[in-house]
Length: 347
Image (cartoon, rainbow, N blue to C red; front, side):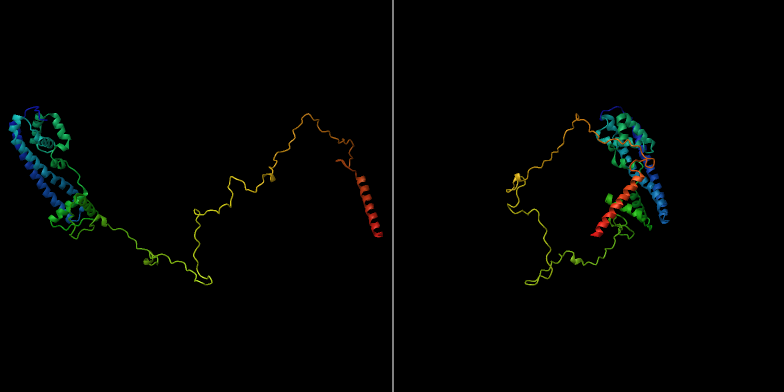
């Protein structure tokens, strides 16, 4: 950076720096008056138990209070630059003032100070366009206090509640935050490693986030003596020696399959037949089928049945015996039966 790109007007720059300091002090005084007025309004809301409106006004109060150190730092940097203008005019911008240059260039575009805008223009002529772009985009190259507080931010809810509690103590207002606000305050104080102002005042409902009310059901009375939980059950009663065996006996022991071994030489190996086995006594079955092949050269079988060329009777169209023949056969049968009966009687 130390290469000189241009020359600034020493007299004009010194005049604008002095005017910037005076203008910054004026803005600082106005900001302090506005802070006092906002505190009064917030206290009125707290006295009327209107916590919601108090939180809204407290957001503006926190941003206004954060601008006070910004005005102080910018004023000190303007005075420092004004005292080293002669050295800068002779030897160029020193490297140890890079943060000073970056901070004044960045603040000139955001603070409502016209003279500081002129200082920004003179520094851009001296340091170049790229230096100005870096000052506007890179927040790490400017002062940390200015980088953290120059922009308007929405503060955390825990910080708002903390500021309300502090303001209520300053004005001796009996302010008790709501349960939700106390949880936010406790969480913020734990994360920032701060002391909770409500502890010890008797107003805190939640002392610790780990002590929130938790449902703890009562234990179930199962009518069991707790002292018996760790004791072993009584052993089985042994029958008296020399008795008749009446009494409790021990349960059978479980069978151990792994330690069981069959008696030796009792079972033959599975891949060998028994010693007295005679394979000839059991010939293999003949499972073949005696199937004669079909001889297609044989003549077809002859039917010896002679055809019936008799003319059927009109009374018996289906063929067979006629009605007179059937009556004669039945009468002969009856005669034969009567002759046999008479022979039996004579005997």
